[in-house]
Figure: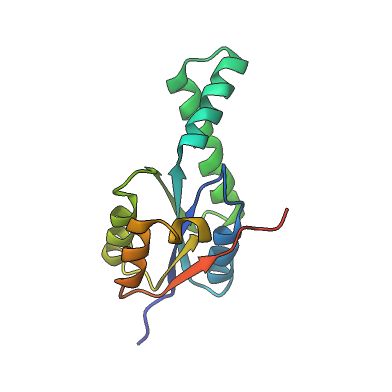
Length: 140
């Protein structure tokens, strides 16, 4: 018996477009599972701050709204057949992503090309027993 295909798709909605999510969607369309790991980068934090200022909200309220909207958009895109996790984009994020992939018995990891160029991510990719797909930026 073969195990179900399960992809971990890393995305930074403020920078990378949806290339990795497109790959995850293909896995789900084939009957597999997907986990979308949303990186909360400095740019994302800046966008939440701008949203809070524009809407006269506190930062925590704006953050909650943005996270809820992102979660709903990914769940809707996958018909509820995915998990969505949020992590701060910092020096330990690569270890968290690959640890989750191993713990959740993922069959592959998809990540944005710009992350693969970072030192910590490079070592995680090269040492990963799980196949890694490096997704190019989505064309504008």
